[in-house]
Image 1: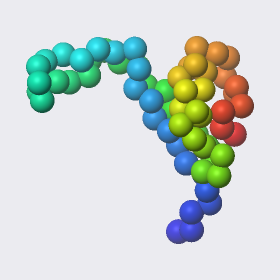
Image 2: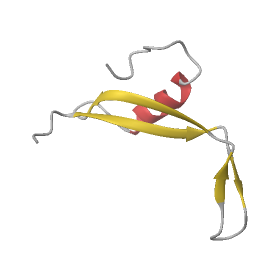
Image 3: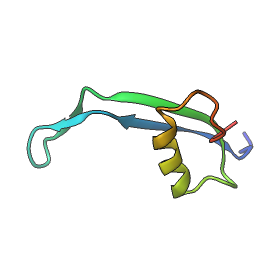
Image 4: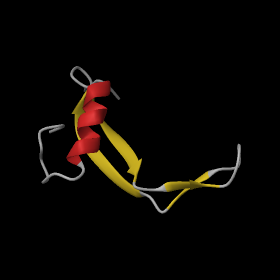
Length: 64
């Protein structure tokens, strides 16, 4: 279908890496989703904002 300009972002955080060299795995992490993000306005700064918003009340204005 046609791309409507909206997408979702999945962020893994609060975990740790276990193992060595190329055999590392991410353990004991949490996952947060940000849905309906607009491709016209999303940037790397939005990712920083998302990281900070994970501990804020819902609907902080990052995405719709």
